[in-house]
Length: 235
Length: 293
Image (cartoon, rainbow over all chains, first blue to last red; front, side, top):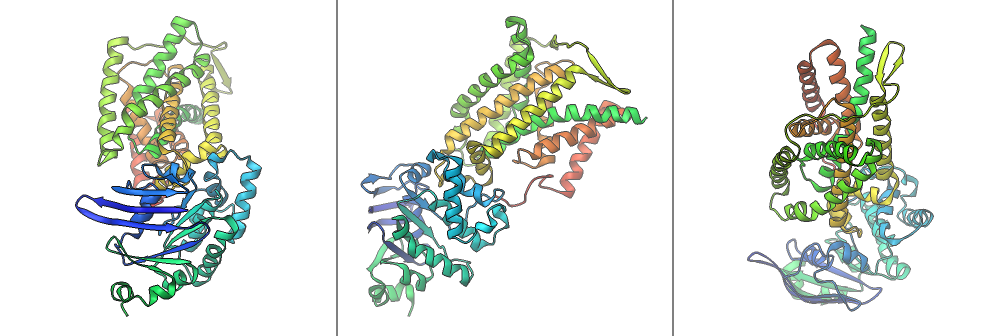
């Protein structure tokens, strides 16, 4: 279970996160909504160690992630994707996945087997020997997702997985994300501007506004919350 | 004329592979750490002195000294990373900061070598029997041939490490995307330190090859090798380890074949003309990829 308690992140005089708390139970999906600049990506960066939190606590299954470097957070079972996929362009798809298994102590055959399973899952297996730079933006997002899934994470942080993805690949992404908690046993923190997908996938939704939690609840609750409608949905 | 040209081409390949090693080690460091190692040439000269004193004091042949020098220089690089290079990453502008710090280190190392070894040029007392091999009318000194074989083996071992082993793949992954490697569980600091160690270890081996193949070395020639290294990596592609091999061979061939027809100064100038031509026609270098990071 992920627990974020009173998380504060300041950049100089600007407060990006002003005491945010959330709980994400095991094998569930939490949607994170908010306008640009509301602190969603900053939250992900604090959880996975790219940013050092100013104050507050983040724990995963009782283990504090505060002060840990990104690679140490990964070792605790946290995988992460970015809005603009960060793949290794001049490596084959198989090599991209194998790098994430570097510290797992697996044999080459095991690495190949796990990589093949996830490349099949994201429907990129036929391109396994191609360089990542040959993939479309949407396919690179799928590759990035496969790269974190090979490591069997406990928690997956997805930053705008549907941005710039064509409808066909978006459907595939939705299917994979929906199956992840049951198939792998992980929980998912999903940041997206695609309201339909967030409503469809999330067990619970949290709306952020100017670095604070504006509302939390099911899709129905969020859609009917007057503060959310005024601040975010605009209707 | 054709035989002279052929001789120039053979020399070009031998010298080019030495240049390639200089470029590869410099490129690995730049690619992974974004550190412009202006002191690289001084470490190469230090490697040449290590071979000289290993022979003079321990009676070790340059070939036997290579693994020893690789390990010692590697350990020195690993330690130096934590003492010096890691601090640069905290700067607001690490690349420019590294340029200045490493230039300073280059001056310090040059001065220390001058103090310790004096200004006289030295040569390695290393000959093989027979001293020359004849291939038709082409003369190839056996030390150069041995240097060629060693350079090929070292380059091959490095390529195997980079493309076939997991740490090597992680190292290449850092070059491609520094942020992404951290979020897949690789300890960037540790791997950066290993890379700096690898770069200096290779510089040490290159120094031994330099002492075997070129007539002499002195504390003053470090910056010449640094300059050659930079030319080679710009030709091959900044940050691309294997691109430096192509860059080194190309530069070596251009320089050595030009020497057949012109003076050494003109040959060096032609090398720069080649560099400018590559920058104009392919700014990212022969193997470089634009906007890949």
